[in-house]
Amino acid sequence: MKDFKSIVYVAVGACSYGVLATIVKYANDLGIKTSALTFLQFFVGFLVLFLLNRFKKNSGKSEKIKTSSKIKLIIWGTALGLTTTLYYLSIQYIPVSLGIILLMQSIWISLIIEIFITKKKPSFYKIISVVIALTGTLLATNIFNQNVIIDFRGLLLGFGAGISYSIAIFASSSIESQVSSSIRSQYLVLGGLILVVLFWNIDIIKNINLSSLPWGILIAIFGTILPPLLFTKGIPKTGIALANIIASLEIPVSILSAIIILNESVAIIQWIGVLIILIAVVTINKKINSRVS
Image 1 (spheres, rainbow, N blue to C red):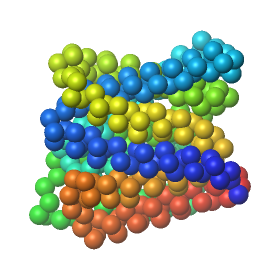
Image 2: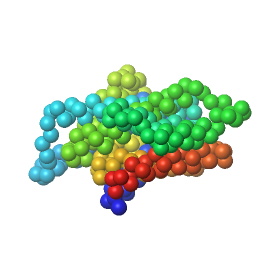
Image 3: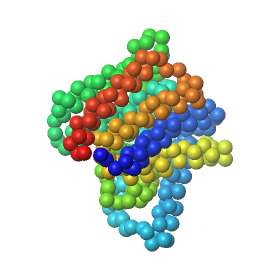
Image 4: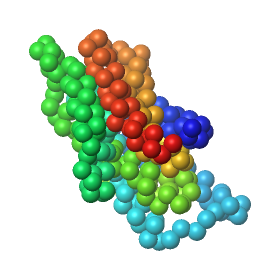
């Protein structure tokens, strides 16, 4: 069996991400702008991680990291910033319960990335699993209900977030994995911060104020402090296959938080779609995981 602590790390990280969009949308409804929230999330997250690593250095527990490794982590970390930006933009047009479904298309997009990296053809087993995941997605989005109007801007942004999230998961599991989780997280989050500043630029200055600070700190805890630390600590030991299964907890957690806090409604057919997606996650990864157990 895999290291139980590592499994818990990944699970808590996934649940942290699960409540994130609900908090952001709730803050948006109070008039807090997305640009300010996104910037504060990454700025506060980077600051906390920087101070944590500085404390370790002063106590003699730090490690040296090559400049090339720093640059590599920062570049890959831009995927974190892009994922967050696209995801937060998507939920301005669609419900959180739909946004999380699109974000978690990373389930099968990760397989596409794996194919490009390993240069191996996907097995029939994996292809069937992808079909199951896509079927579940169609039901979960309730796209066949003619009474439901879906803003396609939200769909495109959400799907883009799913692609970027797949890259971020790959970075958490594979890039400079010999470096400690806190150091890796610091530079990954720095990459995300740079992307956010470049994307939002002047909007950050226009919209940031004291009222946005508490919300920025809150989403920093759930979005850029806990998940990167927990993922970089847990995923290398669980492996990306098992990590994907555990990370699927993000879907029901996100939907339930949206129902409880935002009073979003979710139809029975959407829950069936979510269940099918979760089955697809296990199906995609079960055979892979059994090989490395």
